[in-house]
Amino acid sequence: MTEHDYLGPQGLRTRGTVLVLPGRGETRRSYARFGTRLAADSYRVRVLAAPDADAGSADRLAAELTAAVTDLGPDLVHPLVLIGSDLGAAALAALVAREETGAAWWPDAVVLAALPGYGTHGSDAWDDELDARTHCAVHRGVLSDDTEVARGTLDRAVPSALLDAAYGNAVDVPHLLLVGDADPYADRAALTSAAKTLPRARLAVVRGGHHDVLNDLQHRSVAAEIVTFLEVLRDGTPLVPIVDVESSAW
View (cartoon, rainbow, N blue to C red):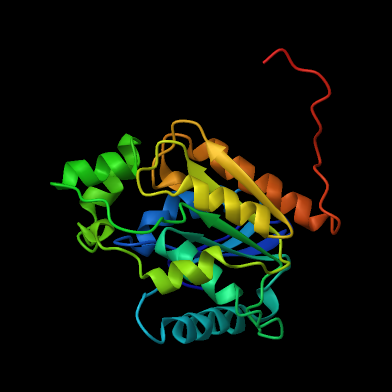
């Protein structure tokens, strides 16, 4: 167990295992609140280091995921779900596209949050980057107070080859795609196309959400969407919503 492991309430059965991959500029501390929130619903959460985007990064990511799964040992409870944000989402989608179904880290499902689009989006100052990332005052403080957060990294384009692999992913693994409708780094057309290409995908758009969609103002609702997805997975296949809205005035 590390300082970036989050455990469920004592005495309750663990309902699944979640491994989280941060994005550009972020650290493991960026996801403390997110990990704590999922753990409150009895999911074991471990936040890993943000992946790289250079040659060989996929093999290193596979090795890191394997190490995490091996380290958990008998504490690994399925479903095993991999969650990535920004570069973490792109690297995860590209790795899953290799279809290494026999790998120890092979997931029961994937959550891709804030999958970036092609090209760059420049920001003139840290406050500009924060505005693009999140409007949550608490999370802005977390990012600003963490001396290990690499400011300005969102200005660097994600390699096109990595995004090609991520958006070309058509693996038959349940996917939850999350994007904020105010995310300046997102490519909604590419996301919509990807959601239609994937055999089992759900695309959820967060109203008013910015790039750090897991940690923006709507983080409670986003976490609830993820927990709902996790609970559906526990029910097995085919995936069927647990709650159906029969009638609503809004």
